[in-house]
Structures are given as C-alpha cells and as structure tokens.
Amino acid sequence: MSVLIITEDTATKLPQVDKWTTPIRKGQDIEKNIELVQLLKTHNSTIPSDDLKKEKAYKTILKKYIRPAKYMFSAVFSEVRDFSDESAELTRTDLYIISGRYGLINGNDEIIPYSKTVKTSIELAELDRKTDFVKNIQTLLNQYSIIIFLLPSEFIKFFLIVGFFDSIPKKQTVIIVTSTQNNTILGKYPNFITLSRKGLARLGAINREKIIDLIKKKNTS
Image 1 (cartoon, rainbow, N blue to C red):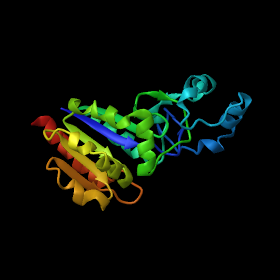
Image 2: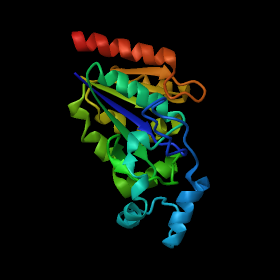
Image 3: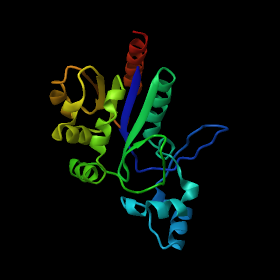
Image 4: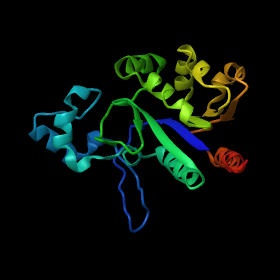
C-alpha cells in the first residue's frame, strides 16, 4: 500500500529550521530578504523566477539557500508536510509539489528559493507547456494505491480541462481536498472522494483525520 500526495508551492519560502525547538518556523517573502537580494545583486542577478535556463548559475550563487523542496515552502504548506510525515509513519508516502519554477518536483528534491507561483488555469497551461508536469504526474500514478490532491479549485479545473482525471485507473482511490466549485463534475468518477477545503487550510483537522483513518484501514486490509 502506498500514498501519493500532490499539492502546490507557496509564495512564502525559506522557513527557519530549528532542530532544537520547533522544527519549522515562519517563512518569508524572499524579495524582502535583504541578504539574499544583496547577494544576487553582487552577481548581477535578480531573484529567480521561471528562468530555469539559469538554474546552474543560481545554484552556485545561492548554494547556502538550497534545501529540499518540502522545507523550502512555508505558511499553509506546513500543514501538508506534517500530514505527509504522519502518513509516512503508516505506509510508503511520497509528496510531490507543483512548482511555478520547476513544474512537478519531489518533496526531497533540492531546489533554490524563487518568486514564481501560478494560480490560474491559463498559467497552469503555460507551466505544463514548459515542464510537462501533467505527464510527469501520470507516469507516477501506477505506483500508488491512494492518490491525494490538496489543491485549489483552479488547479482541479485545469486537470478537468485537460482530461487528466480520466487517466487515473479506477482501481485506485483518489481523494481530492478542494473547494466545492468542481464537486458536481468530480462526482462522475466512482473511485473519487471529495472533501471540502475551507478557509486557508489545505487540509483541515477533520479531513486529515478522515484520510488517516482511510489509510489505516486500507493498510490493514
């Protein structure tokens, strides 16, 4: 039994990692990180965005800021990271992130901080054109028995537009935590479970408990 979690990145990055007290603290808007901005200026560079062609140079300049993706993002992302860690204690769990710079990345991939995020279906289509992130997700699907999407409604809308959900085998359990905007359409998939995403939460305590209970049941069946 294995679990795949798909979520998106955040605009706030570089949360403080403190191994002695609270492991992950508050992040920041990197454009307001004076030290980072000044370092880039000394190399005649600006804050990384979706300019992947400059990745090698940026990694050299920003080597002290490189970290695994799951520790790069903060704010509401911490809720997903904690949930992924809890699920990993029960069964194999892999966390993947739709990144405005990289496309699809594994939570363990080492990346640099960047400013680019995507929010609309149009932006997602452009990101997919550049990075093939939809195809990259599709190549992962057969490895997992439970697939969890923790995404806003625009991402779900985009997946519906491109027919992505039709490619998911019906033998797999799909859990989508999002706003109710697309629930009627998602209802046509018999193996889908939709849970409401409320406020700023990507998951919410009640939804987290429901999903963990489901993972436990499937892991023992």
